[in-house]
Length: 298
Image 1 (tube, rainbow, N blue to C red):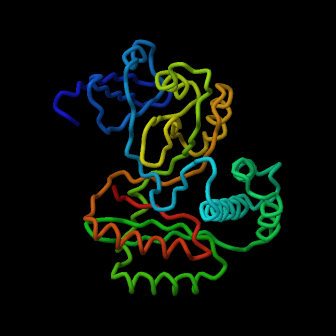
Image 2 (image 1 turned 180 degrees about the vertical axis):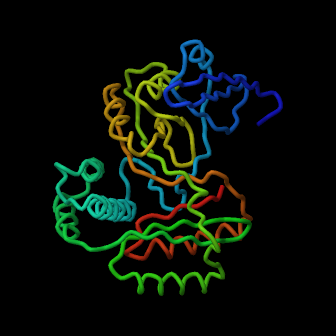
């Protein structure tokens, strides 16, 4: 935070949820990166937010995030479709239900896949292939330089083979498995990326009110993984359907909606360390049974 940035803290206790609202603001001449968390707030707190620019350095997965742009090339589309397929696979296994009419999580993923032009036959084939799957979900924790942690989510029917593949990659990369559980260093959240209606003349300001009313906890209007004009809403995973429905009532176009694990604390790496870790993560993501990879790296 720069020295001339003014800090405003408004605390509002939500008696039902025992949560606090922390709001930060800057003067209009400068921008800085910070974290903004929005809970249900009293009206007098809302008025203090009129000229705020928001940015949160969330642990949104930088390694594999596919930016939502028009005219994505074939490679981007292929990566995107593969990601949707993995998400469908996980949703089917978690609920033990391949029917989108009764599996709301699967239905949400299918809707996003269709919105991103994933072929109908590919979607149906994915559902059919995994409808009787006996794959089990596993978590793998790898430690890198300077306290960096790589959290890997997998879904496999052959745990032994997957571990062999992991062992090979870990050994060749000079990394190691965590000595104790590291999953508690991440927090499970729902992430929605949306574009507001063009009818909104003060979208950056209005999104605060919309986030609160929709049930979101946080909102970002800028970030490395956001295209200009898109906002990121963060909520509890179980609240995603409600938040999505409410945002759509405000005419937001939802282009991304999924659960993620965000790091509670971040670490910084040198360029060489960063490139080395990126190479390892790209290799891990190439394994067919890997669902998602999370990290605590800035």
